[in-house]
Length: 195
Ligand SMILES: CC(C)(COP(=O)(O)OP(=O)(O)OC[C@H]1O[C@@H](n2cnc3c(N)ncnc32)[C@H](O)[C@@H]1OP(=O)(O)O)[C@@H](O)C(=O)NCCC(=O)NCCS
Image (tube, rainbow, N blue to C red; front, top):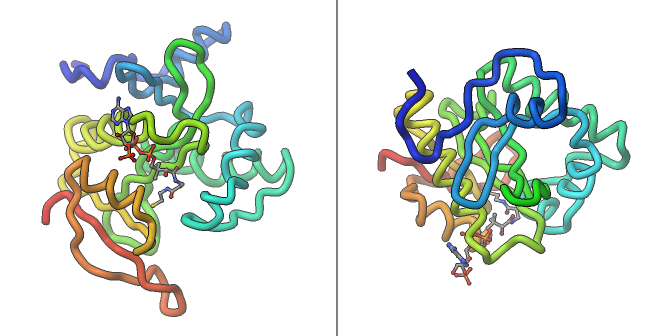
């Protein structure tokens, strides 16, 4: 029933969980060699407050206006959690498997402004250059393709985001064209899995 994909070891999260260990396994979506990707809850607000206020996040993804704990709770509820409910996927929290330390977000996003589902990722700078983003993004891409059956996956990035472009190419996405998410927005690069 659950695909024999080495990146997908977590059970589907359906039942109510009682203990924190049960809860963690209940929320788990993907497991890789070094990482666990799990659904976010409002308990992750402090980490999200830090992550979305990193200068690199604001520069390359944008200012989400998350200034305090309550803003972070709202961001989680209206962003990732709403996406899980609406689409069955979303941005997941990435944790180190051994310590369960949260290090970033990676997952799938369906935006009103794009016809396709895109792969997204952001990590705290302390966890860059260790291959964690690559490991998470490979697993998410395989999950989107093999488990969710999404035929065409895309990704968007600023033209000057070299780290992101390098990572997208490493996971097998190819530059397709420049796009704008809205009429007054800057041009960004669209990468796709089926170019
Ligand atoms: C984009 C982002 C996630 C890339 O993170 P990253 O850590 O550079 O990406 P990777 O996981 O692919 O790591 C690559 C580096 O780890 C090194 N590495 C070390 N151990 C590794 C391993 N076991 N496996 C693979 N790479 C490894 C690679 O050699 C590579 O080094 P290099 O950059 O010097 O060539 C990160 O820069 C980020 O969070 N940026 C801010 C948010 C953002 O821009 N998001 C994207 C919006 S479109």
